[in-house]
Length: 190
Image 1: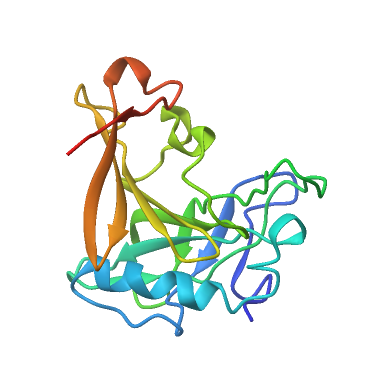
Image 2 (image 1 turned 30 degrees about the horizontal axis):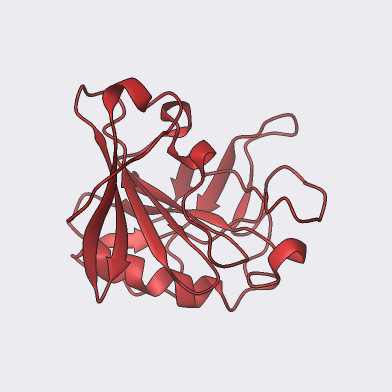
């Protein structure tokens, strides 16, 4: 079980800026970021409260590289705003602002977070432009249904929302440039 101060924490006492340590030994590194992504949900679901629905815990972390073409996952952090338990299905954890890895400078590619219930698609809040820090956002629910958002946050092209099926990404929606502020999805039909 990851422990505060050893594996994650706040930058300072008054900050909501979270740091996490890496690499997380529960996840094998790979030169294919999807191989790392596929390992996240099963590992997170073994953590306390990860599948406890309204009484559960959301976990956040980061995917990063040290510049050598190998991708790693950070330890997960449960740090976030405390929300009342109930049917609102609103949990939160703060996406990390940095990764501390003693082997070198970490370049964060993506953030990831879990939801302790299922089904749970990526929320509107998680899709909004003002919540995007990295190139990719990964979210998965208690049944390990994995969503990937490629926000193209500071670009004129649409963001892309995918779902992971049989180790492939299937495009399920786009966030048009005029909808990036709200995170509104335009469904993609095949």
